[in-house]
Amino acid sequence: MATLKFYLNSRPDADGMSCVYFRLSISRSCVLRGRTDVKIDSKDWDDVAGRPKKNVRVLSEVYLNAQRRLPMIESHIMAKCAVCNDVTSDMLKAWIVDLDYPEIVESAKSETSNPVFIDVFQMFIDDRVKSNLVTASRIKHYTMAKALWDRFELYTRRRRRVLDMSLTDIENFRSFFFDEHNLFEQRGKKTVPMKKWEYVYHDYRKIYCYASQPRSRNYFSVTVKLLACVWRWASDNITPLRNIFAKFDKGREVYGTPWYILPEVRNKLYQATLSGELSVQRDIFVFQSLTGMRYSDMSRLTKANIRGNYLEYIAKKTVNETPDTIRVPLHPTAKEIIMRYKDNSRNSLLPFISQQKYNDDIKKIFLNVPECDVQVTVLDPKTRTERSAYLHEVASSHMGRRNFIGGLKENGFADEDICSMSGHSEGSKAIARYRTISDDRKRKMIDGL
Image (cartoon, rainbow, N blue to C red; front, side, top):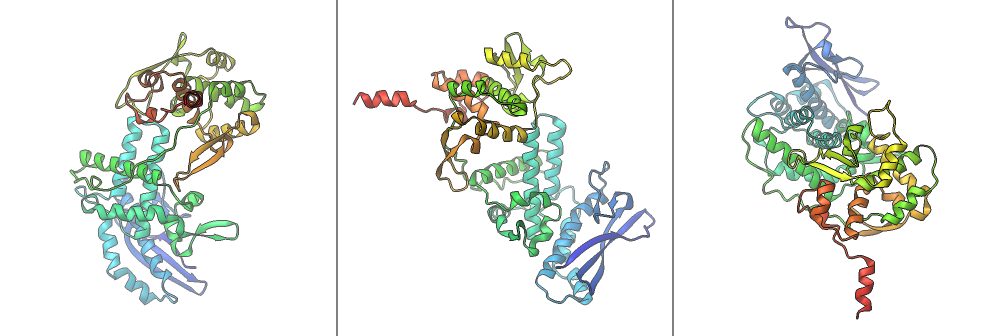
């Protein structure tokens, strides 16, 4: 299998910049070398990785140029190697000067009036981080979407500039989004990219298990919303753009009826005997079920958020649209949990952990309390068909929020009243999905026949 590694010329030029060379290893007996026209300051170069260093403080134009172009050069050469049995130095020279390579070079040039979309995406993320107006989980979603687009461009061997992009690019992204898992194969017990596509995943080795799985249409709709958000930001802040997403059919998000546990099941869970960390996270889960908070908001709570018998906070997700203070009366059990974990040496209200660990612990909690581990009907997001599952299989941090909303809906409270404590916007479709008729009411209807 061919491998390619970049390295620097040992002699920098008059400006202190070193030219980037590459070594292409076809086999033990066939090693070829070549030169790129990319230059970089040696202090910004990682000799071991053969790449520009990560987390460089000063992002110079030369650095960004190298970071952007080297993966494209690598993908171009590796794609050529994948379809050739014997590679010679003459063939390598021809590859560098053939029609594909000038496109790569041209596409990598920096033009402030027509920037590369992947660079705009990073600028957008940096802007959102600096604003401190979006949650860490939302930043993570942006970063994952950017990584998806990056792999798409590596796969197609072309960087897109914003003024040159069209509806066709989004359609091609759709194909890659749903077909990416087909680029992987099983080798022994490991799932890895096919040799032909290994260059795409050079910087994405940690996401094999994620990228090798089929994706849902809901996830695609959400991802395209994020791309469209970046596009609008670029049009407002960098250069006016025509809205190529306006006529694109991303599909609508489809979700089943929200499932949740009723107060009597929640109380059983609270009274169940658990030990260690599971006991702590069970209490936090019950607290969330009594306050209806998103985990991103709940994990930011401090003692200052408690005002007498009320919990007060501003939902970070909607702070730009409805920055209202949400005020929730504290349930006696919620007060009990706060007192149980009162700790003056800790700034946070409760001993919160990362959301992923919290998700994992919630599943373990239901598995350890069988009487609460009920079956629910869920909509499979990939096939959009219904299936039955136990709570220990599907429960997550958002379930506490659903328990709160579902319990209030069961008691007949109006949507606008629930929104005042859940942080939903008035008329929210998410709240409307909880509009179900209880089994007791259905039985009474049938008895009246």
